[in-house]
Length: 252
Length: 329
Picture 1 (cartoon, rainbow over the protein chains, first blue to last red):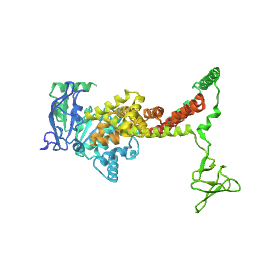
Picture 2: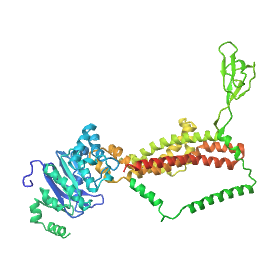
Picture 3: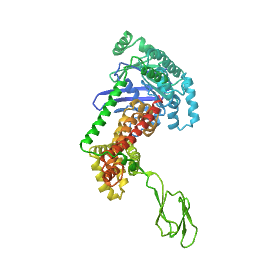
Picture 4: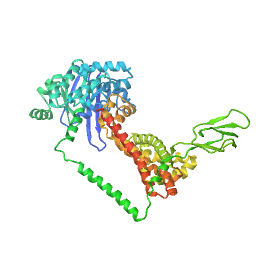
């Protein structure tokens, strides 16, 4: 739980800054620790830098100052071996980004085969087990285009899990979905959380944040404004900007 | 998939669709009129149409020659179809069967390389042989231009500035100069320095030229694959090369294929320019045939038709390939 973080955080972002080539600051001195088994939900208005922060955590976004340490590996600096790190950090995207030319099963086995060097049989068994887990065992031979958005996102989660990562990053995983499909994806994520997966989730689903998060982080204008356990965060928000944000969300 | 095909068919037969055949008929009529116009115009300049002269330049009926492999005595069989040559210095006689025309007579003493007989055989005429060379040059250039084009296209969007510079200069220089000039440079300069044969000089010039265009097609095809695909592959730990090979290129290929087919059709047509360097390709063969027949209209129409068959077959093949690729969702 948030009140008792493990001694060594799994993810540690220290004073991370992201300045774009045009001078705009995407992130300013954002610091975030995520302990093993913790579920951290990041919320905030669009353009607040929450997706940017998440993407720096597996090196998809470079940083211009500060440092990021994940599971003992430092991510900042040229020498950092991004590939080694990315094996340990799974990522789920807003637009699913499944490989459209591969079947569902092939989507799940590609990286385990090519990156982990698994035997085809092992990779297939692992993939099939994950498809059962996300409730799509019968879709193994389908192509992504034949699936609904919700199904595609569940496949994308399974694809990331196939690498057996230590951390899962979710970048607005339900924002591109039709409303009736949001539930099935959140259900899979809830299940993952109860299994003890360390998760970092950027989302607008306040219900999910309230129910699943150990800690909720509020970001605005490139900085982390405040963070709290969900009961405090939603029940007795202290920060003025957070109050405004929550009012706007509730109005909608 | 099947549903949409059915829907398309239904739409095709729908009574609400306007009839299109009168328009096709009108277009056909236009071409008939055009042909008539050409015919009348040629009458005006007293042109003699000699279409019957063309086939012999497509298919050669000149037989294969049978020449004496050694000195000896000829014996012709009774049916006049085969002949036996007995070596003068002793040894096993050799028989030649199925001759269409025996030139030596019975009992003739012949010396080595004397013409004995002809065998009837249909062979390729000069135009078909020219077509063969055009095909060979185009096919060889196609292979090399694809290799060159993929390397240069990938290099153009590489993260390495040196690779980017090299590829950009290559593409800009080649696209900014005429192919004919490039052929002259390759033939007279590079060809003589590297001791290239005319054939390989032609292939080099065409490959380098077409490769620059292929590079742009490949670059555009790769850049058209959504960025999320690269990000997803990278987030799974795939290396740059693995991402390219397993994720980007398979998807880019489908976008690359149609413009690439167009480029290959251009390649076949551009190959006619190599005829300036003593290579008897289809165009050069056409020129030679014209100079011996004085029938430029017939010969050049025939040559054009032969190029059309080549390019038409290619675009048909590519369309089939595209359709097969489309089936994978």
